[in-house]
Image (tube, rainbow, N blue to C red; front, side):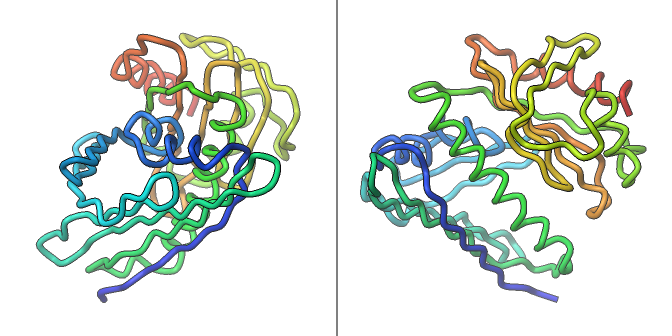
Length: 248
């Protein structure tokens, strides 16, 4: 059954409206906290998105720096579309309040589990936006993603991942983390985000994100933001894919 949806969020961010605008209304900025690769062309009023084989082209419907940014993707053959809106207000102490809305139409009703996961995913991404603004001001990241093996699409895979990373079964945000990973750099930093479905580790040069998706019938995945220069995203993705296969 066709389904209209809307997810609205409000977050306090540790940066000025101008800095928030740069993070949510530029391609390099969006890539540094959200998934995929983005190109924002204010002159042509277009936003282009790419993630693997998935691509979309959207029209910018509001461009009012540094206050309001909105865009709407071209509808698919079945009428499905996504639209995003960011409203930014200055707050005390050099901070900002971001009001965010993601609305759209899906020709398929994916079920309550999907839309709940959808909302929880935005909580994680907006937290990552806050981490970007607080700990990596003026820096941009390369987005790296990889899926685990099909066998990692079960609830039992998540505790196994935590154990492989050397993280307690009930992790607590704020604890120090040091993970030795075969074929990858040592992850040494802070556990900055933890829920039943997401794990985040912040290091001086990266925001590492692990996703548990068994409720959607999908394997564990990673979606990291690497702030080092000259990152080869394809090579890094291959390394992480190989690690996930071996670890899970």
